[in-house]
Length: 365
Image (tube, rainbow, N blue to C red; front, side, top):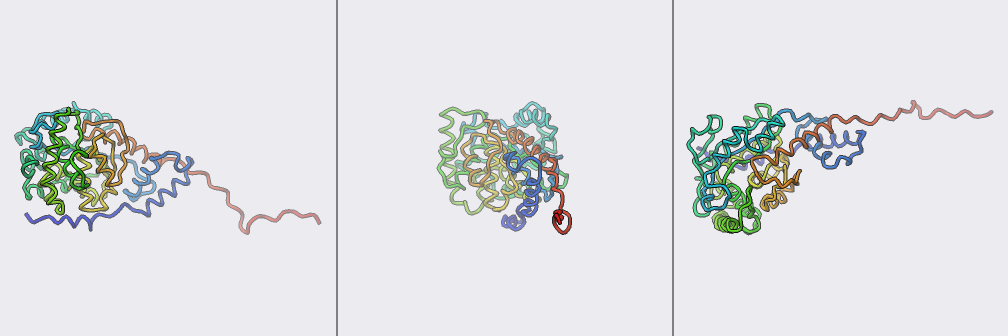
């Protein structure tokens, strides 16, 4: 496999169309509801117009939830409320329609796609369309060993790129991006701490099921030890993902970057998506212009990453479950912004004055 040149993404990714955004702002000024009266919905509508290069903005008609799945060896240290290797059950619940994201997606009529990158289960446990991109069975224990080999990290990142191309080619017009993992928030916290230059305690959260104090201390120690391994490879993002990331995180990073190349907007879910986005920003500084932060999950690492990328969450409902559920809650808000930007009528035009200016007033002789 030829080594991937991540610098190519910098050249390929353009910012959303600034001229179109100005046209969208001008249209908003002419509409019957005063500009600014709709708060952040105005900003969202203008952002979508720029992303689509269309004024008025087109409705979001073919959104999709994409969930990258994997197990992480570090979960064996008891850093998660779920058992190590437990992501298989989470994936099964989504496929059976018994998880929060399944319920929300069903109500909003949004299809859900799961991509197994490193689940710790037999490859025939799920259908071919779920497992065909799998890189390995589980990722390594990042406090003492690499999550992946460099070749595995590159294969995972390339898989993410390929999936982004598949979605763009199929007509998907917006992606809700999340993860299904056990131990993934620990790997995400390591990436965020390494890229932001912070200590383990600053980014260590309690995960979706709120671990107790002892588990939090174990998680903090694991992140601290993994950080020692991450710092020497900070200059090479592919090596960083191989050292302390995982196959699911590497694939999400490639997916985010290629979505920016293909001008496909993405709503980010929780701390794992935020960590991958932060790696993506380090690779291509214009890429975050194509992403929205769906919600505030309460994870300190997510807040740190979003602040570094200047992304403000759309919602703050305290949703910690992951699996794309919080970001999917933000989808109706984005759709509403698009509808308002496109469908609000414009103010009636002022009657034009006759040619030559005002008619002369009658004068007495």
